[in-house]
Image (cartoon, rainbow over all chains, first blue to last red; front, side):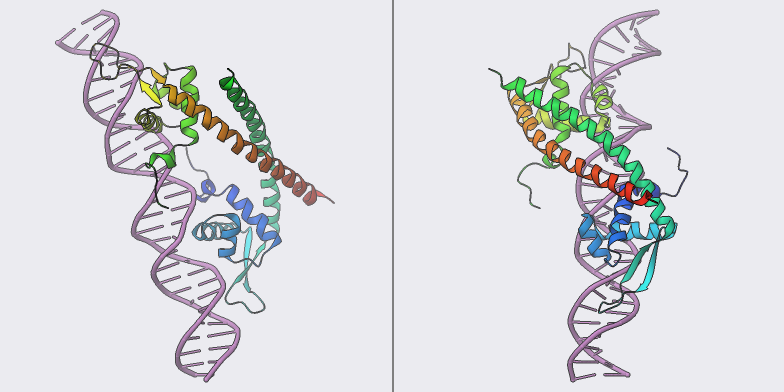
Length: 119
Length: 119
DNA sequence: GTCTGTATGTTCAGTCATTGAACAGCAGTA
DNA sequence: TACTGCTGTTCAATGACTGAACATACAGAC
């Protein structure tokens, strides 16, 4: 396995997509809130956010208005928006394949259970 | 997280089930063949096989007999057979839930792609 | 101004599952 | 015997991930 891109590429994938999708709708979320929403650790969110900023898909805006402390606003860049959609297309294909596999496995499990409980 | 059972329990799960299901049909498979079939490493297969033998769900035929082949035949014990079916039932439930989630996510992806490509 | 509390982003040593190359033993063959 | 090939077994290394601890900086009270 040779690496054509930076090491993040391997880790990223779905995590990056989910991060972008969530931030597009709620850019005011803190990293801790993002972590909880996505069900991953704070460290991972931080790692991914930095990777996305590095790539130029995300921009960490200056301070958040209102009463909060030192929080950023994570805005998707135009390129980030395009990439997010491209990722959605790829994920759709992948998910459809997973769906087919799952349907087959469910059928198999049903057959197996049925077979083993017959007199 | 306290442990009520041995550490394997955490690891095992689906890997154990898939191993039992495969060995039930082809007990003559070697650990290397099992690894390739299941798409996991040799080390993991060895680890799981040992755990299953330990639990008494699997019996390695002709264990340490000097006048026989080095290769084992991995036979499911009666208990192993029962446990395998019980696991199948649990997996069916889990897979059905995964299926529902997947259907929803596919719908979401489709909507997102559609929305972002409109005029 | 200073202090204090609090919410933030950042770090990094540790955990865990997993890998696969290397090892050791046995059967068959020349 | 020596060699080849397949077997199960081991274990150091890897990589993803965690979350407690840290450093920073604003808000509000004084």
